[in-house]
Length: 399
Picture (cartoon, rainbow, N blue to C red):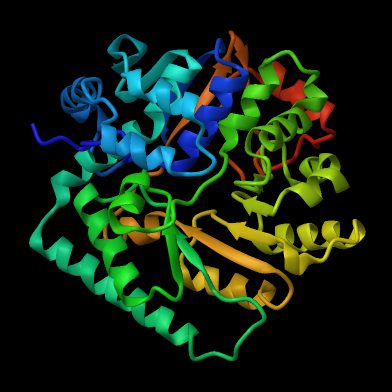
């Protein structure tokens, strides 16, 4: 067996930042995470079940090593008691199940959230890499390297354009749907070597440590969604989550995610207090141009200088798409671009759209009302209707 995951550091930074916050604020929450593949058709994922189980057995033997804990402890926003927790942490195999549900791969992690929330990125990386091992050939690797060279030329071209007020900066967000761990390291190493003026970090904590890059990430949907089921009034869950984040990190990790109930509902809660405390906003669904304009209009209404804030785009980005957004916004505000699959799995093959999302907390459904069609993962239509009503989200909202 060739392990996909060899280190528990090989996950997104925001897993650690959310994990720490949940350990401090809601350590007793019971949660459920469900794997979904939205587009598999080249090779049935159920054929991978035996290999997935073997990989999960291996994952549950891993522990954080002393040098890994030392690295995490050196990040100023990671607290010593969280490092102590990680020192004794080990994934529990009883908390995750893999099965064939009428020809569909089903993976469910269920248990204390501070024990199961970290499964997500590892599970996605495992499924994706096992799938693409069936397509790995010298020709595929050659095509991947050719496309990577093209990307580097595109980046050099952007440097020949007229200077804008703020620089073009992008980050690797590609752990979960990468072609392989080995390819991921090759891509990031080459970007770091060839275009360091544009490539500013990675969400992969292991690669950040090994390559002396900045680890990038703040929060994901699951963090805010958890607050839908932790006792606060539903209408106040975003404010409660943001306030908790401010108290946990006190100025660090200041990019807020906006699309758990849609941008309009988010901005209704993102008042002057939060707008001043947070460094910027992250886009992850819906029209990025419309989203950016709404963000800048909101800052203007609050009389906040947009040049002191940052808009981070991270929804299915390619470099050409990132360049278009950069040209629109870089003279008006700071920008950042988190690019995933297009960097780490652009091999000329059909890619998988896989997710593993939080569906329940403490036996209650949680959900997001995304600004993009089809990005919802909640089977409780009553709760969805209630969420729409509470936040005045129209029935025809795309999420």
